[in-house]
Image (cartoon, rainbow, N blue to C red; front, side, top):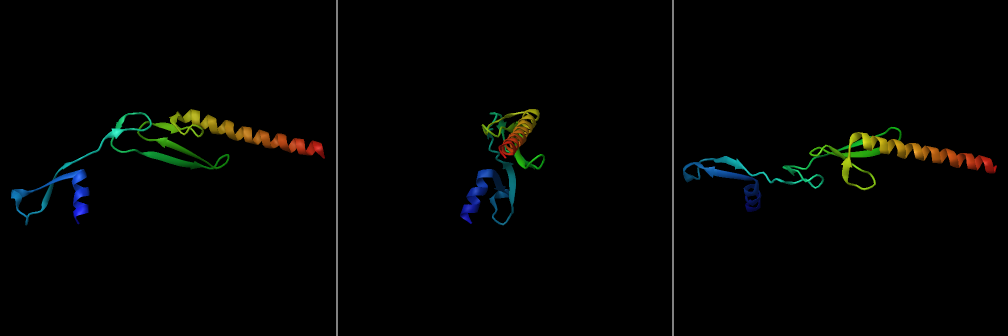
Length: 112
């Protein structure tokens, strides 16, 4: 029970009316731990990321920081891209994969 009370004291301030143990605790204040965002440096209360799994043209994952409104770059793993940049990256990535597969197939057919 003491551990719970310690953890509760870290996030909230409670008081009893007239210091009477029979009266219920009253919430006086919430303690919000604000910290800088790891990605942009803004002061935030909670770090929020949205992760989406897309299936077109092939399965891939995108991560967005909801505090900064920027997307994580798949190669650098840093939050530095706009939505247009990340969409263009995946489009170029998959189109180059398709082009390489077609090129390999043509080379195999030419060998036969």
